[in-house]
Image (tube, rainbow, N blue to C red; front, side, top):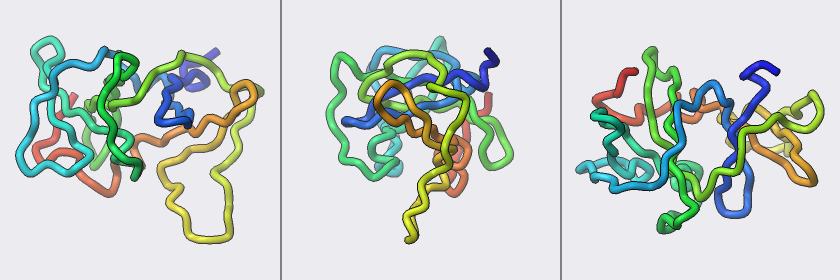
Length: 155
């Protein structure tokens, strides 16, 4: 099975989301995060990963969910994505990470059409895993309209 068919599944609150495994560099336990002055609410700060500063985004806050303290299950998913014409390396704070997996079946449904305006641009589609749904992120579009860091972090 190709990498594009594999996803890292993660939890935020009671929901399950996924990112393509090809965008994930590594998954880390939560560690000390250094704050950045005047950062947007979703930008928690930076961490050191083998001598490199990596910005950490609180996915809950970025998606409009309330922030919660990290737990022993929380993880930082270090991702690499193209945004604003460059490659960014970002850490995404998630409540938990489940597994690397394929979705059930070979299809993914498009984001649902609810007949009203809904911000679905950061969703590639809706997959299925067991009895539940998995919302698959388009990370580039999640960060396309905003520059997550004024300084940028190139790969």
